[in-house]
Amino acid sequence: MNVEILNIKGQSTGRNIELPAEIFGVTPNEHVLYLSVKEYLANQRQGTHDSTERGDVSRSTRKIKRQKGTGGARAGSLKNPVFKGGGRAFGPHPRDYSQKLNKKVKVLARKSALSQMAAANNIIVIEDFKLDSPKTKEFHNIVKNLNLADSKSLFVTPSYNETVYLSGRNLPKTSLQVAKDLNAYDILNARKIVLTESSINQIVSTLS
Image (cartoon, rainbow, N blue to C red; front, side, top):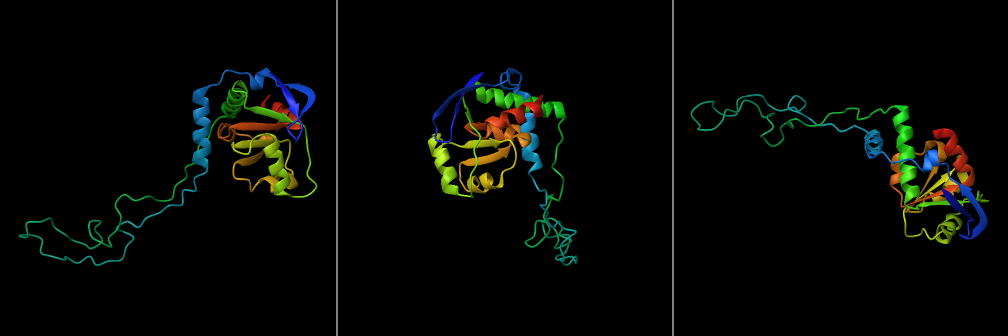
């Protein structure tokens, strides 16, 4: 797939780049994408929820009424979940929600996601750029020049750049990611993917 390279002003540089077909041109595997997204979302859960069941509350266990002749059910403890202030029945407890996928499945998921975005012409390639100091306004101008102000976009850089990260982290519809840390969820969650030239080489070396 041949893509035109733009500068940070949204103008053509007169150069094109060929996106490798083995990464940006595979047939998307929807089931693998589903597994990868499910794993990512599950791994974001803290699992620290907890509840007090009848064994955790401190209340009287005396018989609060006679057991027979009332026409109602027996009641042997105020810890019973049917009473106000009693324990919760079948409440949640801390647990580990994390899931694991094989490395080859994760690689195929990322290739499928990138190929799906490429097929929909949702990948933009820009030349490498640097910012002298953290300025959200400067990064916002780049986003506007690329006509992405109203779209959820993902900027991919070859490595972590603190200045670029600090400049773009506060923009509501813009996210940044290092090429080697790309995952299927981040790719599919964006409307447009903005790749810098150097990040493409990093993606190829990571997924090859």
